[in-house]
Amino acid sequence: AEGLRRKKKLMLETSELTTPTALANGLKTRDFTIRAGETGHSVTVVQLTDLHIGYCNEEDLNNPTLASTAQNRGESATPPTWPNRNSVLRNLGYALDYADGLDANQIVITGDALDYLSMGGLNLLKEKIWSRYPGKVLIATGNHEMVQKMGGKVDETVSEADRFKMLKDNWEHDPIYTSRVLRDKVMVIQMDNGLNDRDEVAQPHSGNLFHAEQVELLKKDLELAKKNRYVVLLFFHTPIGTGNPADKVVNATYIPGANSGVHTTQNLYENVAAGTNHDSEASAAIWNLIRENSDNIAAIFAGHVHGDFYSEILGKTRKIPQILLTGMAYENGHALKITVEY
Image: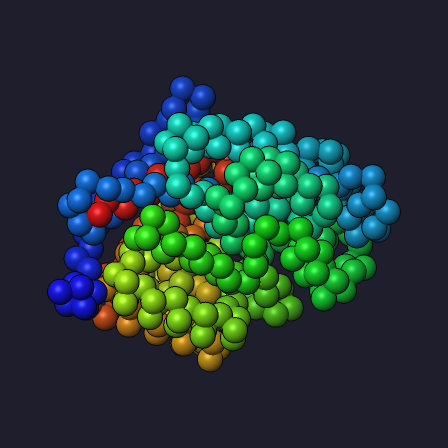
């Protein structure tokens, strides 16, 4: 009987994504529900994205690249520029208090937690997030975490290898790929697809942002999920292509202000990390794994574009919702509550 139960396919249903609702402190929240059974149990995950925390301590300012960045980026620049660190940390506090109120099982940040790579920024992440929630947070890396030249005038003075070591040594989990199973039912997977997003490497996005070593890791996790009937939630920074040419123009469902600089439309067919006609071998393999496992992959969550967008990946047996969230650095912050009922 157990063997038959294990082989039975999951029956996944997803709700409509709610429109943003402002809390008393101004934090805008949205709800998204996945139903995979009727036992009365549930798992709650809170997604945040694009914090863009930028801060240099005294040691950082000995690095000419970071010193120039600090002079030209954020609230200390003349004149001040986006993002304002004080506002970001305020918004983050609102969002984490919200997650606490929900007693969330997991918090996932989908990239650009840092505005640029510095020890000051890494220490703030540790103080505000890692130490507050040991073992309860996943942070997918984006296209800012490996950069030290961000609005500054001095080219990178630290090698890419040394910058990655600095990042990895101060990250609580493997930044390339990490998976966790919550309550023996929900598998959350974070995958980096932003660290290679450099002007000289991948502009415009053309499917070469995933890593070759991620393919086998994802394959094994999806095999385990199928065997154990886990509900899989995928989190990464840059969205993937839907497989539907009609999605060359997808309209935003929410934009944080007319002067925010956030685009009102996105090309979610081509301007993506995987699923385009220019895929790398690794990215094509990952896109195909996602398509083939639409029975278990309930939804995909990303950021990067800073606004709210909804699309659907053309999976083998069902369309997989892909939800893009507005960045934490806008307004009084943004959060998505993901509930898996089973």
